[in-house]
Image (cartoon, rainbow, N blue to C red; front, top):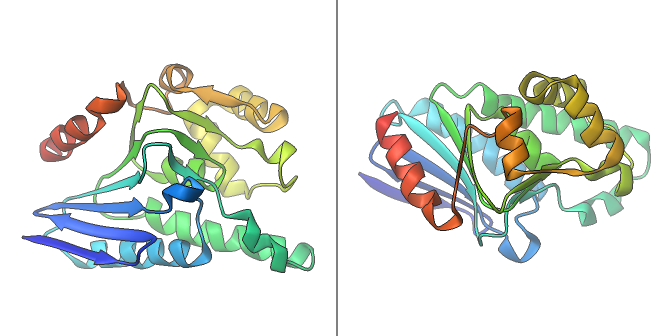
Length: 205
């Protein structure tokens, strides 16, 4: 059974037992809108309600990014600290929902996984990246905000406290090779090999 639904910015497809979410704003490196975050939450609910789904894959469109964080133009409506805290609470709820999905989740990463995109990838069970991928949380030179404790905890659990501190303090990026060595990425492939490897892995799962 095949199925394709969703919005223009967040696509959902199911091919047999494999469900796929595609973040579809390639012109903005798949930066997340509020609607995309809500769509991600609702799709997790949908997957959990469908016993025929055995694996969930998350990927970005365009080959330049998995998700390059949250679209910061939306922050123009913020008026104070409470808005920032509410934003982090919203992300915690949505990323936490992804983390609790009942089936194995696979992040297929080609390009940047940054900020909120890094948090989404960290909440997945497995992360396959291409050699072109980069990972980071450059808030020290962009918004200057803090992450939630849950977001920090996921990074510490995956790459350790020293690497987490280095990423946060320096606003630098891990290369694909560094992410693999640190244990954040479970596999690294050539860009052209990502689709085939994801298909092979999901069929195995």
